[in-house]
Length: 278
Ligand SMILES: NC(=O)c1ccc[n+]([C@@H]2O[C@H](COP(=O)([O-])OP(=O)(O)OC[C@H]3O[C@@H](n4cnc5c(N)ncnc54)[C@H](OP(=O)(O)O)[C@@H]3O)[C@@H](O)[C@H]2O)c1
Image (tube, rainbow, N blue to C red; front, side):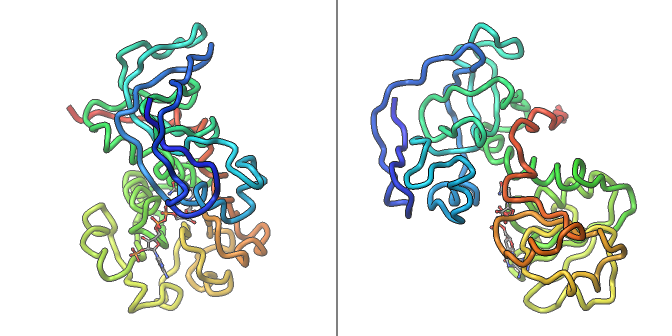
């Protein structure tokens, strides 16, 4: 099969398209024919090996441990291992391979059953492949780590990004009053996905508007905790996600910072429930 191979950390130039053996099906694995895979910030981190912490978190200290990159995937089941109970050949599936050895950038991938979910019929493979990691990160931040309740006021810093666009929609679905922080070029998009209020960070500082929020879901991490406190209704109302901004780490229990992948453990992908609209 054709696969993208990464033997070193670096820029996209380190990637090669090669012929490699098709993965064999493990007892607990599902062999899928890949129809679509996506690229997001987490793939960039895996490609570059930066921040270095990600290397000692199991990615390989000097060279990448997993030679075929690619986290989010959607495809059709080709074969299943003998212990697999939820899927059968022909099923359309999608999932997140972050904790199972990556491998979405190939014609076939063998994925543990637990990392997959049925693809909703109303999503194309391309749409489904854009969902898993970013959406579960948003879901875990707004539901699992701190459940958002109807009418609570949530501010999403970084609302126009991969996680932010899901966060806005999830917060809206929970009945929250949603404020999105974005830059000028994203205004229509952020409004169209459900933000009640939008703040353009190039023109306005969300910590100085006088508004206070029950939850600040911070996907940018560019403000100090003391700045953010001006916008918080409660001391523990800030919830950050991300690999950057070391100062965020110093906020201790006041900032329930989740490392880049803490909030998006792929085994939780199966807990996302989808409702086809047709
Ligand atoms: N993507 C994932 O699956 C994933 C999973 C786990 C953790 N994370 C972490 O979550 C964080 C966000 O990831 P992402 O994928 O959503 O990133 P992203 O797609 O690059 O989005 C980041 C957004 O931040 C906005 N932004 C930049 N400067 C800003 C500022 N000063 N104030 C407010 N917003 C600003 C940008 O908005 P404009 O375009 O409007 O400028 C951009 O859309 C990262 O730390 C990432 O490591 C991501």
